[in-house]
Length: 164
Image (tube, rainbow, N blue to C red; front, side):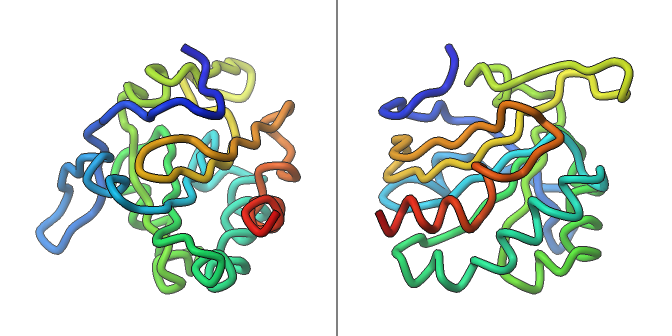
């Protein structure tokens, strides 16, 4: 399966940092009956992800909420410790973005959004995309052609698409 508009996202157990350490969270529990923006990226602390993608959603978080999004979630093929530290260091946690780790790339592979780039050390990582998901169904999907770019998947592009 390669993710497309109209698809229902499969449930997945992703990891996040909780008060007591790593905890599993069911993706469906965050999506059912809700409007959620999900953005996924190749890796925490990597160049474009840190300097462009995450900041674009920090900048647009309030406007996305005003446009109807209940949550903004970042998913990356990383462990919850890295995702938690990265959310803190970028200011994303303070801005209210949720960071979830797909540590074994199970969700990413299930939706056909995985890629591998050995020269960059990226194995079984996520393509860069942004999605607007309503009650688990993909309504808007913006996938970058090049994982080093952040244009169509940026927060501003998603906000424009939601506002239509």
